[in-house]
Amino acid sequence: MAQLPLTEPVLLVLLSLAEQPRHGYSIIKDVEQVSGGRVVLSTGTLYGALQRLLAQGWIEDFEEDENSRDRRAYRLTARGRRNLQIEVERMKQLTKVASLRIARKEA
Amino acid sequence: MLYLFRFLLRLYPADFFREFAEEMTLVFSQRQRDVRHRGLWVRALYLAREFRGMVTGALREQFTDVSFRRFDMRSFRFPRATIIVMLVTLVNVGFAIERAKRITGGDDTRSSWPVLPGMFVGWLVLMGILGLIGYVILRALSQSGSQRLSSIETRPQRR
Image 1: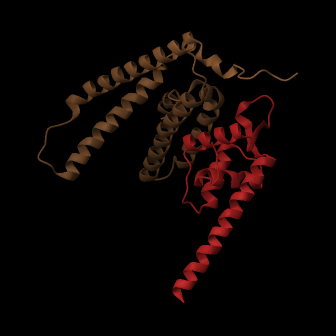
Image 2: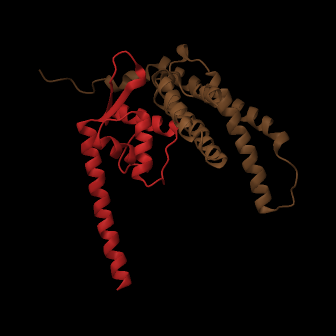
């Protein structure tokens, strides 16, 4: 189940799909790029996350080419986008508090 | 490598396999092409990451599948892939015990490997007995009709 707070792979998959619909391979490449090469998803990890997000209704799949399953792509649903926004707000809040505390300690 | 990847896909639950196996194989092939001309170290790291992801992913999906599926004894089939997963887990437990012994450096230098199969069978028997006891209790409760107690009206309804 994809519950808040999200694990890093799930968060990065959602961020990747927030920009545009993508195929599995494209998600892996984008996640690697977004994380500066720090996170490289394995195929098993990616499809485990996609399966849970599909089951939760956070993403949906669609066929780009009617005749082939190879061109199945994924996109965020309204629910997924809303939950991603909640998670980003939570992280912003946490980062703000962390910055303040670190600055206070240094002063 | 593709052959091994396809074999590992069989460790996933049947529903997951039907849904994603073809697509996962395609993605794996595409990524394999990406690292084909990279150094040996990069390729080894890629394959290690992929296969670790496959095994841990399969274990997680099998666990989720067993946890959330409606359990029906009449349709229950012991999946062959589970035997492989259990054996992999057993070998991992063996290595963990051996490693822990080396770290603690105790006097007991005997290997744990000979006793592991016995332990494994013992646990299976114990789980079987516990399952049987649970089944007998549920069956007895079902026969007694106690599940209907909740629907008994304790006071007459007003008309």
